[in-house]
Length: 94
Image 1: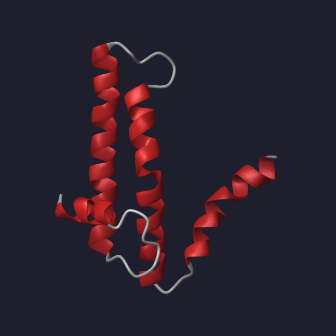
Image 2: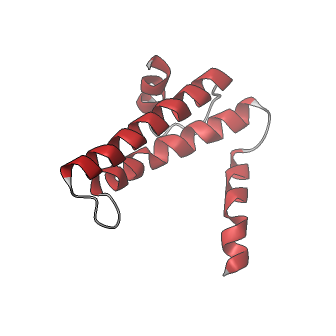
Image 3: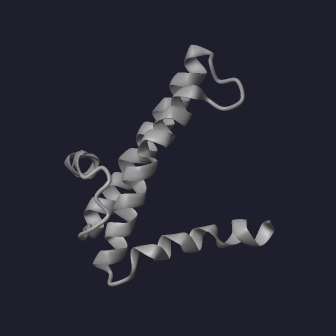
């Protein structure tokens, strides 16, 4: 949990490095909290179409997730711009 909070404290810090443990612990807790948000949406009965709690959580974690991914790429010796490779299939379909 400390690693997750560390990433949140470095909310939009795209410089520096992130160790492997920091990245994967953030991913783990991010998935756990996302699943909890989906379950809460279902239990509260507000899960019509897109779940509002899950969408708010996902939007809140977008920038910290990108920041820790860029810092992880810096740690393995790659440019942070490599994260844009994920958008290639989207661009190809347009």
